[in-house]
Amino acid sequence: MITRTTETAFRILITLASFPDDRVVPLGELHTHLGGSQTYLAKVTTSLTRARIVRSTRGSQGGLMLARSPKDITLLDVLSATQGMPAQVATASSDPGIGNTRMFHAVMEDVHQSVLASFRSHSIADLLQEPCENS
Image 1 (cartoon, rainbow, N blue to C red):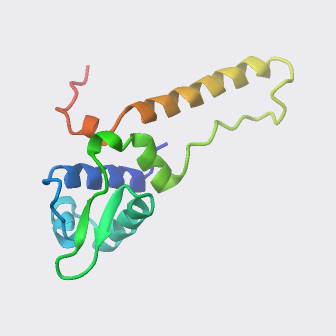
Image 2 (cartoon, rainbow, N blue to C red; image 1 turned 60 degrees about the vertical axis):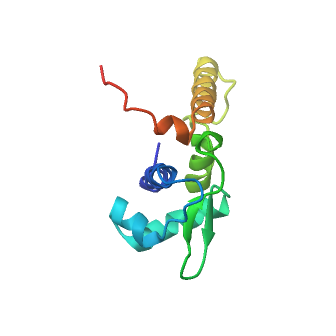
């Protein structure tokens, strides 16, 4: 459900959020924190910039910074910027009104809406909190 690109975007945003609000972070410094390919990081940050989640400045003092507060960047914003809006679950039948599949389609729509609501209700600021304990 979550692609590597989206996970990388979350990591980029968490890293940027750890710096002071007015700090421009050069891509090379971001790469130092996150590792991986600098070209790939640039690709992901381009998606975030197009979505106006990240602000990019060029030049010798250039780099990246969050375009808005971490509490105002929902996980759905990031998901949409990196992999598009989550599609509804596809089902084998193309006609949702046939026989016993009607309830299945209703359940799948409920699951889809729940996923959207969950991603919409959590922000990058939530990811900055202490790690959850696994039960």
